[in-house]
Amino acid sequence: MNTKIEIATNQKTDYGKKVRQLLLDNVVPILFIIICLIGVKLAKQPPLYILNELVARVARNSFIVLALIIPVLAGMGLNFAIVLGAMAGQIAIIAVTHWKITGLAGFATTIVMCTPFAIVFGYLTGKLLNKTKGQEMITSMILGFFANGLYQLVFLFFIGTIIPMKNKVLVLTTGIGIKNTIDLMAIKYSLDNIFKLSMSKTLFIFGVLCAVGMVMYYVYKVILKKSKMQNPVKYYVYLVICAVISVTGFALMNTKSVYNMVMLPIITFAVIGMLCLFNVFIVKTKLGQEFRTVGQDMHIAKVSGIHVDKVRVIAIIISTVLAAWGQIIFLQNMGTLNTYGSHEQVGMFAAAALLIGGASVTKATIGQALTGTLLLHTLFIVSPQAGKNLLGSAEIGEYFRSFVAYGVIGVSLGLHAWKHQVQAKRKTS
Image (tube, rainbow, N blue to C red; front, side, top):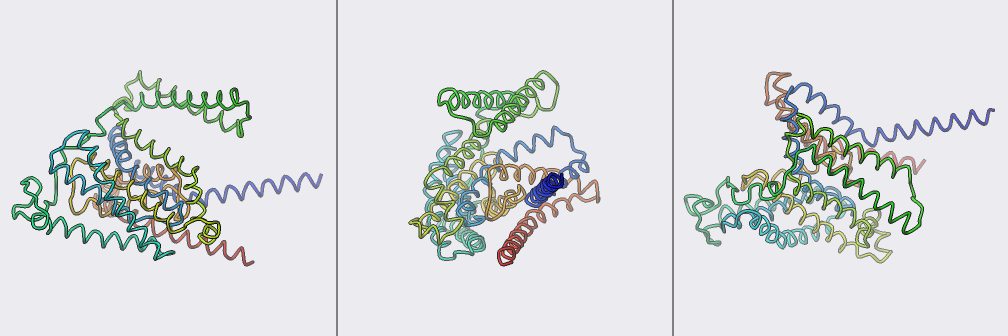
């Protein structure tokens, strides 16, 4: 009898420890979920407005946040040098605007043109970060500031002097330097407007496709391959979730819900989904395993025969190229380019979104990236109006947004250092 009581007590203790650990690991996203709910309540904005804004922001920002995952996997922390990738994207956009290539052709041209620039920038960044191992984040941040100076030198002084360009729309009246603001009518919504669906129809189709995919996986795995499911309960839970999503979407299609008024850029979200699949796929490859090994311990990786420096450079190149593409997706949605400012806060806000989702400088997942993007931009939407309603000034909300972006990075880095100290004490004791 006493033995049973002891076992039950131990199980309760283990369960309590797991719950505490779960709360500790997710303290940042839980905190921001609470803040967002309070902000939505205080802002008193129409649900249709919030949903429309949220869809637009998540569509244009998710790609560039996902670009941060691979360097974290490779143990290089948050790659603030994705600013260089954003610059590569903007170089291509300015060129395409000058050549007046419009629509989807213009968008495709920017993607093709920015890629070699991003590869070169990523290679040079990776080489530099290999010289400053252990200080990658601060190095990449300072590198971003340095690259910004060179970028401004090129577009303020070289255009019209060393680099000939005669374009009244782009070049300043003096004939030297690019204008501060450029209208991107050539590629505006070139990706977003290819195909759109209402949110209710999207939920229905997404749920059906996921359910069909899971059934096909079951048929292939269990019936054709005749192998057992590793976790059947998890499989059936996911299948039920897919069914609920599709039924919910179908039910909403025949109502006057706001979900029928919110239009989703399907192709843009499909591109984001493809990047998610790429991140999942690359982890399962030999290169992905090398990323993991290098990220866990560079010395063991080197002893195992892995070319550590080369793997780290590849991680940064991939991140920089993805950032360049992400900046193009961002700007085609915005429709305007702030020539000297659009790229400046890219690294900071992408890192903040990733950390808000529960990631750290040593571990980041796709789910954390998307969750963080959703929470950060929900806060961005409601904070000005919430600040105005609560304190009589919308500027308070604006300041709060900047405070959040910088503050969450500082808090996350502090928590990461604290966890390392706790783990070190446990090992020595």
